[in-house]
Image (cartoon, rainbow, N blue to C red; front, side, top):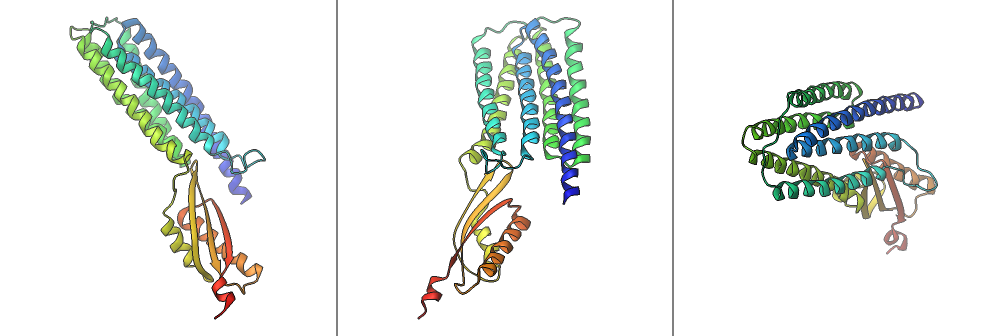
Length: 296
């Protein structure tokens, strides 16, 4: 067990280092896009820069999660620290929603005008593509090597950014050649992409923040009822704690059981829930079978 903890800790540190490198690279990409967007006045490019800002924030959240997720519960946080991730995701989604709406409204309000070009701006945006393709490949390699869901998701997100940037470059270049309306269309498309990303983050965060049911209660009942000595299941509740799941339930057992026998039943239920449903935190309240204790 101690060796496993050391291995997990080393993996978390490596994931954290990779996320820092990814965040710095995304910040550089953000700067490159801002330079081109401000210089040309292209809302599509500026919108793509907004998307990169979300990537930097996402890297920061992921790094924050890695730092906190392995911290044990303490006096002020007896249920652990995993919901900090969810709260940060909600804040990020709110920020992206505001920025996406502002980008869309700005595109609709502005008169379509040709976006100027420059010999060095297109190579700069092509450089952004090269950086993102390299980042996605590098991070994907480490995701497979470390079996990291966070790195894998971030690598897929970076690949999606590549496709977005390709669309933006095409729109910007065509706009500079006499079709200014296309820059507006691309800006609206990027705004929709940002809002879609925000919606996905809201969809991920809100159920956890409001303690929505995390696992099917009937499935929990079925697993608990299969344990010898369980007479009935009176109630089942579940919720998510970030990536972890917590379950609390009331189980009816024979009233003649000793304390140690009843405790063994609770332990068995916990082990089965952890094995079958990956429940990290199970609280089981045992009640005596009053009908049996009262007799006929």
